[in-house]
Amino acid sequence: MKYYIFAFFLFFIIKLSAQEQDTINADSLDDNTIVKAKKNDYLPLTKSPSGAVFRSLTFPGWGQIYVNNYCKAPVFIGLAGFLWYRIITNHFDYKDYKKQLDIIENQSSFEYRIVEGKMVTAIDNRDLSGLYLLGVYILSMVDAYSGAHLFDFNISSDLSYSIKLDTDFTGKPYIKVGFFYTLK
Image (cartoon, rainbow, N blue to C red; front, side):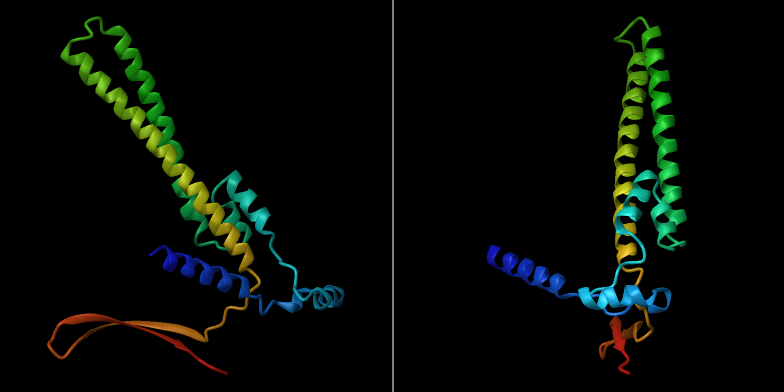
């Protein structure tokens, strides 16, 4: 089994190293840049991947705005804002419950256990929101990095897909997915 996994990863690494950037918007480049690119056999990227990552690290969504992914930016901004709000409110709830526990004298009372349970829940929710926020930051950075790398690629409508609900000869429904590539 581990040989299959090793072969899969080897194939995946070879496939990644064989990919090249085939087209770029050459209208925005001057002749000197194109001559340099022909010497080095690559064209420089228009958007900096590290710049996109640092912008997303500063605030999720800023990297998406930098690479012109305006549809994704509000999602990351909204998620980050909501999670920051949840972290702050749960932290203040934890402090309030902690003060209530200090006021209650009988530590074996039913009221003390209820407030203690609420305090533990507030701590758990705060920590879980922080973990989700970390995930949003990481996802935002990865998306901005890939968006910056793919910014210069020519996206054409030569590749299309279709999803269709169909039935087989027995009448059972199934989903038919088709990919089509138009050669020019």
